[in-house]
Length: 499
Ligand SMILES: *[C@@H]1O[C@H](CO)[C@@H](O)[C@H](O)[C@H]1NC(C)=O
Ligand SMILES: *[C@@H]1O[C@H](CO)[C@@H](O)[C@H](O)[C@H]1NC(C)=O
Image (cartoon, rainbow, N blue to C red):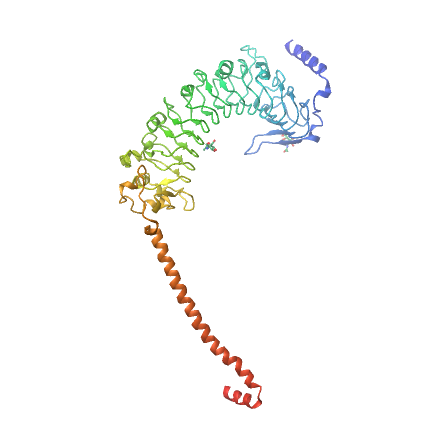
């Protein structure tokens, strides 16, 4: 009875749809790329229908006949990206797993029940369109009625809504995919904040593992927004307007990766523990002048730390290693860092126990910074065994900038020279005494070198002149002889002479 009514409903739907509003499925392989790939040792079997940039205006009405749509073990990959579709209609029915993309489609609206006949939709890419929060109602992601629990949920795993025009989400936007969704991107939408309805929509995603809210002009996230996201492992909030880690981030007890780059932080500090955090990116923070080393006690599991391109940062205290003893990769390149220790008022460096620098570093990138090469820097580099790190490259720009006498010295060579005898006033906080230009070792060396060059040149020129003279003499004889040969007698005598 139920199937009968369903067929009737289907017939009604098919009957009411005007055929020209769908692209013809039977001939679609003439316009698009169709590929049927059987299972090999490396890939599962899939059917590919690639209609990227084919001037389509509608959804396809049916699958190409040669596609096998009844086998749930197979997969269909459909791309309608780069077509001017504007209003996206329901996808044709299939029992296979489905990967769908309609990115750069000028989409403004989505049919309700978009995936209702494609229950095994795995990934949907709707990025780079003109979708607003209003176009994303709960109905769009509705699945088929499940008599067991009375739900209409869908098994969508990954949804990409990046680069649309969403300013806020409706409360029920994701209600039917709340349990299944593991990856969500809302990157580059003008959200401004995650409060009220947007907060409620996100808070339902309890199985989410990967959330991208980068470049969303965010100033604020509600303190309770992430309370239930116990599965979230990766959070991307780079390129927003945060001045500190939002409080709600500390609720993410499974967080492994946090991308904070390009936010206007002045001070980096971890107010509360992030016990699982392994990877952190705090690059391109143009206002960040202080990194609170002690607060790294809250991120003890850190393995990869990226602190690139921070132009306000002059000190990065490497004794942070005593808190993050598992750190493997530390990238401090292309910043304005002079010191790897905290310089004290009188110009001396804080003495740290060598044990504080005990580490498991495999990569330490220090290039592109104006290093001040003093005794303290040398000591820190020795403690972390910088010259033994395999990534060191003779040609890179990891060089001293001050003091003057060491300018251009590569940091790996700093460990081989004596810098600890330098007078204390060569420290960073007191004016550096510089010898008059002609007394600096470089100048002396250069003068000696130029004297040497002049003397050497003189000798060479002298030798050349002497040689030339000698040569000329012999050549003058050579030239004059044939003139003499013009006389027969002379030539005879000459020939005899030669014999
Ligand atoms: C894939 O398998 C089907 C049935 O097993 C077969 O009919 C078809 O020819 C195969 N296609 C290719 C490209 O090997
Ligand atoms: C860190 O962030 C910067 C700036 O957004 C980016 O260019 C870089 O690729 C990121 N690096 C890693 C390792 O995530």
